[in-house]
Length: 343
Image (cartoon, rainbow, N blue to C red):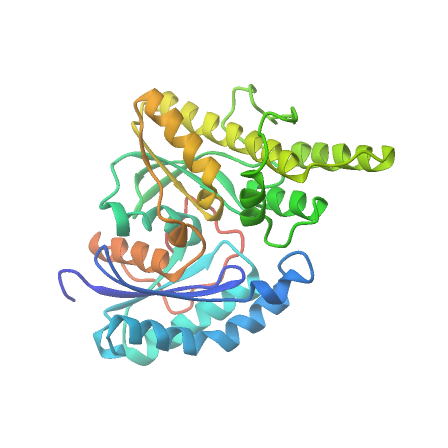
């Protein structure tokens, strides 16, 4: 294998079929086929619809990635795939495809953790990760704080959501406000016309001494506030509601992240996952990191959402670290713990 192996990564944990190709930490291709429009009319991701969409999109997405990278299968040195966590049926499609490519091409296979891949992807833009760093992952399914001594070998869970994840709360509040699915980008857009101080929404687990998150109460508070005004016939200024909700989420996320940095005396914070594309989160995180003397790393929005490049990036780290390839009978594990970086 070359000093900087070329790794093809496959991501199918939810509603996006992602295929990425990297050489070391150099991004060569990142192609995505999203089924989000098929789910929009249901107001959320339908697992069976997602699985069927992955089946249809897999081969053409792989072919597009190879074309964009200017490569053939003969140029690939290893295959990496998300083995979990995620939707069971969706994961099975990606894992089965990766096994077929690895077996057919005679290449090593690396089953990787979706969450650890969200950490590894930042290296494609900002270089090797500091050791250690604190990572905060925020998405539709996860809100987690991690201590990362080495993303290829050790990830330690410091805190996570006890109910709704941040992205899930964005989707549910967007539905209450009559905004389209997925809710995150639309709340971010509408909130720019509102005031984050207009409504004092609650901040769950704000001063509880843990590094865990809770957004279910906030989501319910927004719904009750809207319902009360609808019953009384009062007008609802959606931008103010969106901005105030967003401010509450971002305040909690950044506060907990900086608490983790202080507790473990770590001066580098990485934020990843789909919600990391939120403009207010990025701005507040930068403000608070600057004030605390913490260096902030956030991938560009296109690498925050689920994609194959992040899987390939982690696969490349595993190859470079000399980690043994996965067996060809690896399972798709919908509840794979973050502490299991590879299977």
